[in-house]
Each structure stands twice: as structure tokens, then as C-alpha cells.
Amino acid sequence: MRSPERRLPLNTLYAFEAVGRHCHVRNAARELHLTHAAVSRQIRVLEEQLEVRLFDRAGNRMQLTAAGQRFLAVVQETLATLQQGVLHLLIVRFVTRGCAFG
Picture 1: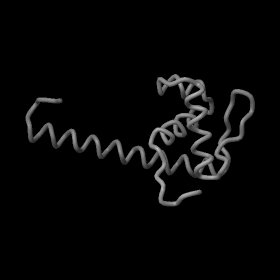
Picture 2: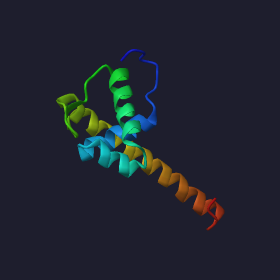
Picture 3: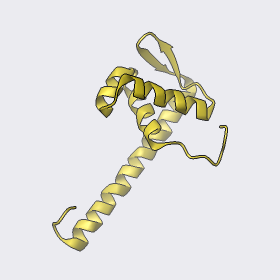
Picture 4: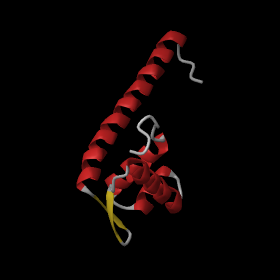
């Protein structure tokens, strides 16, 4: 990684996770409500920052490399933990404020 103290943008991790699951940029872009170009760029930025090739490209298909497979598992676990944290905060807010959301 070029700069160890630099944080990876969260949107690149969401894009990587979606492409890793779908093995296809267009399907990931559709799921994320982004353009194909935006998702491709996020993947390219992530690979450049990590200095690791995460995908083998074959036409429209994206195949995870061995490093990409290992990283996908870490990213999926991390995003699930983040989602659990958000859900916990919403529950706490609901309990302490009553039914009002917003």
C-alpha cells in the first residue's frame, strides 16, 4: 500500500464487494445505482491503492484473484460488522426516543 496511514474510501469497498459477488461490473453497478464507469474506476483506485491485482478481467466478466478472494471475505465481514453497528445505534435511538425516527 502506498501510504499505510491513508484510509481506503468506503465506497471502493462497497464496489469491490458487489463486483466480487457478481463477478460482473454492470450487475454490481446496477445494484449500487452507479454507472459502469464509476464502479470500474472505484475498482481501479482500490487496486492502485493496495498495489494488488484483485481481479482477472475477461471481457465483461471479472474473476477474483487468490488475493481478491481473501480480501473479499475480509471486506464482507467488515461491512456486515459495520451494518450491525448501525442497526444497534438505530435500536438504541428507538428505545431511548420512542417510535420517532429521523
